[in-house]
Image 1: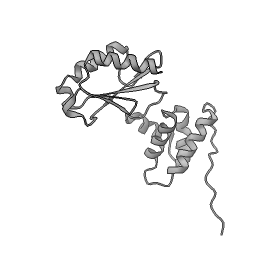
Image 2: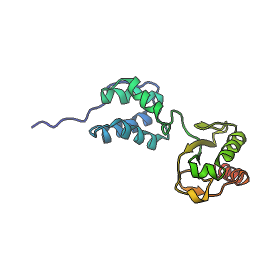
Image 3: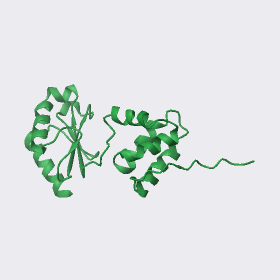
Image 4: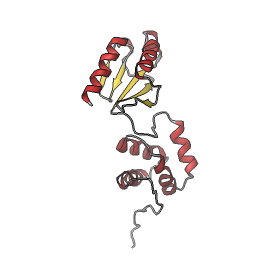
Length: 172
């Protein structure tokens, strides 16, 4: 009985560095047999690389027998997926109703003005990427923010925000 060989990508992604190509292929091989494999693959690629490179879309599409437009449509539809590398630190501001009731909109405006960026953008020095989230589970202590998926902060004022960003930049 002949065993099926794992499918090896024959499509060339000239602009995709070999290390990234290898990470994308590992993600594909790990999830290709799952129903609705595209989303788990995209999550795995972003987990491995920090973003989903545009140059990887053709490779993913080819391996899943999809069009590049279908893959691009999913990546661009979900705000979670990034198409460029994030900053060294990711600051996620809660935009849920409870935090809004406790001043999150003013904090959001301050953050955007102070950093000089909008949501889904990175500061010019590459230090901070600003992202919205829609609940950090810290509702009674808003406004809240999360830095780098492991540092939750509550009752964040503009002054506290500035100190946290300064500390994050110093850690870079």
